[in-house]
Image (cartoon, rainbow, N blue to C red; front, side, top):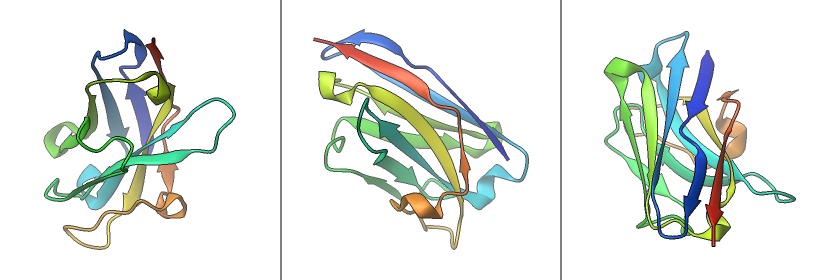
Length: 126
């Protein structure tokens, strides 16, 4: 399974970006997906997760209400729409895949993700 993230860039405070992550290899729809981020000098932190069907989503408190995770199984792609961006959102964003335990299953636990993309840098200027 290979994950390719894209869509990062430089944006002003209050702006928006949409990240994409295309998955190749084994059946995309068997995986729950997540977005994680890592700021300079900090540990990788959970941002959002989505179940294999897209019916269930979950967000960290720091992004809830501003970010939206979604997926298109027909395109083997998961998205992260990021609105009202803040300087503290500056980080490398990683998509990750976890073999789903059920149709509505998702996880915010890093150790449950088996596959990771290479990361895409998001910089929010103040």
